Image (cartoon, rainbow, N blue to C red; front, side, top):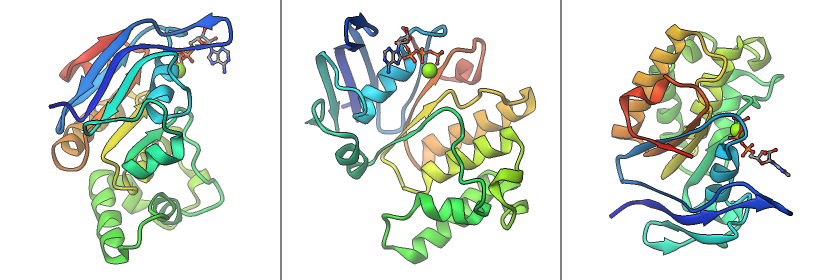
Length: 208
Ligand SMILES: Nc1ncnc2c1ncn2[C@@H]1O[C@H](COP(=O)(O)OP(=O)(O)OP(=O)(O)O)[C@@H](O)[C@H]1O
Ligand SMILES: [Mg+2]
């Protein structure tokens, strides 16, 4: 059975219809990229999964439970974590402090330290820049930090919005490898992308 199912979802804002009859599923160790041009509704669909936009029709099911009407904070508690486009790191805090903030709801301090080490292993640049202010990182490095911070919450599914945006081809291929590792050992993922070809060339995508 799928961990996450989106079934016949419509979304919109006021009179504007955005997504129409979108269905997709992500399995326990799965990954799907929502693919579409600018304005197609990728962000809106991810936000509807995260509980930031309420679907007008259809259902979102997570771990066998209908979560369509839940708010974002309730969905976050269930382990549905979104990393929005645009990095949003805390520029004046260190890389390590940013990672710790991703784990602020967790009580398992030893495991949090172990996860920081894990993130520094995945994203080696974060180990090198551990004490640096996040605002001094390059755009691509900040993107890595934002993804790692999302993973520090130990999500049960990670919603990654446009993870490759603004990354060099070299960083895109590095991130592709990391995402595959994450899917196998940490959490399934649902990404969005307006770029083609892109990261998702190595896994299933859903065109909207
Ligand atoms: N808060 C909002 N209020 C009204 N309309 C919105 C709002 N957010 C997005 N839209 C509209 O909904 C449509 C889909 O936008 P959305 O951001 O979901 O697309 P997208 O596929 O993520 O695009 P991009 O590739 O540019 O990020 C667009 O026409 C956009 O103008
Ligand atoms: Mg978008």
